Length: 278
Ligand code: C2E
Ligand code: MG
Ligand code: MG
Ligand code: MG
Image 1 (cartoon, rainbow, N blue to C red):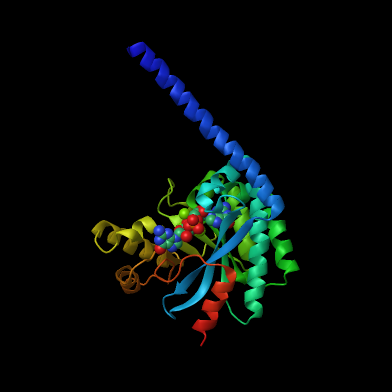
Image 2 (image 1 turned 90 degrees about the vertical axis):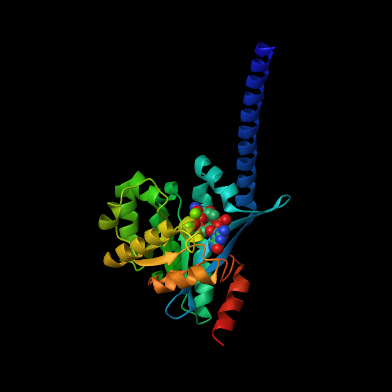
C-alpha cells in the first residue's frame, strides 16, 4: 500500500544520502594518503598561438594515480578537496610542481608559459602568494613563465581578496586569466576593475559554434569586448578545423583543445616542443 511505499522511498532516499556522504569520506581519506604518498601528476595541455601556429603555453591539469582505481580526473576529486580544505596542500603541490616544470622547459631553451588553476579557497588563502614567491625563487625562474587561472565565481565571491592576490602576481610579471568565461553567475563589472590578461572562453560556447548562430554571436562579441579591454582571448575545447577557422577569422588569439592535443605528461609535451622546433 501507499504508506509502505512512502516509508520505503524515504528509507531508500536516506540510504543513498548515506552512501554519498560515505563515498565522500572515503575519497577524503584517500586524498590524505595521496598527498603523503605523492600520487598526483601534472599533465600539460598545449595552448597554440593563432598567429604563429606554435605552442606558447601549457595548462597544468592535475591527475591522481590512485593505487587501485587508476587514473582519476580532477572533476572527481577537486570538489571534495575544496570542501575538505585539502585543496590547500594539493594546490601547493601543483604550484611547486608547475615551477619545476617551467624551469625544466626553460632550461631546454623553450619560451613556454605554464598556466595553473586556482580554486576559490586558494585565492582566499593569505599565504598563497608567499608560497608562490618562494617556489619561483627556489627554482630561479622568471615569473613571466607562470600564469594563474581563476574562474569568474572566485572574482565575485571575495573581490578584494582576489584583487590583492592577482595584482601582486601581476606586479612580479605573472599573467592572470579568467577561466571558463561566460559560465559563471557574475556581472561583467569585475572586468574593468581587476588586473587581467586573458579571457578563456568556455568550451560550451565553442562546441556548437559551427552550427549555432547564437554561439557565433556570443564568441564574436566576447572577442571584440576583450580586445577593447586590452585582453587576449583563448578558446577552450577546440576539436575541429571548422571551429578553428571560425576563431581565426574572428581574431581569437590562442586555442586549446583535442584538435591539437589532449593533456599529456611532461615528457611527451617536451617531445612535442622538440618536434615543433625542427
Ligand atoms: P579547466 O581549467 O577548464 O580545464 C580544461 C578542461 O577541459 C580539462 O579537463 C581538459 O582536459 C578539458 N579539455 C581540453 N580540451 C578539450 C576538448 O577539446 N574537448 C573536451 N571535451 N575537453 C577538453 P580536466 O583536465 O579533466 O580538468 C577539469 C577541471 O578540473 C579543470 O577545468 C579545472 O577546473 C579543474 N582542475 C584541473 N587541474 C586542477 C588543479 O591543479 N587545481 C585546481 N584547483 N583545479 C584543477
Ligand atoms: Mg583552467
Ligand atoms: Mg576552463
Ligand atoms: Mg572548467
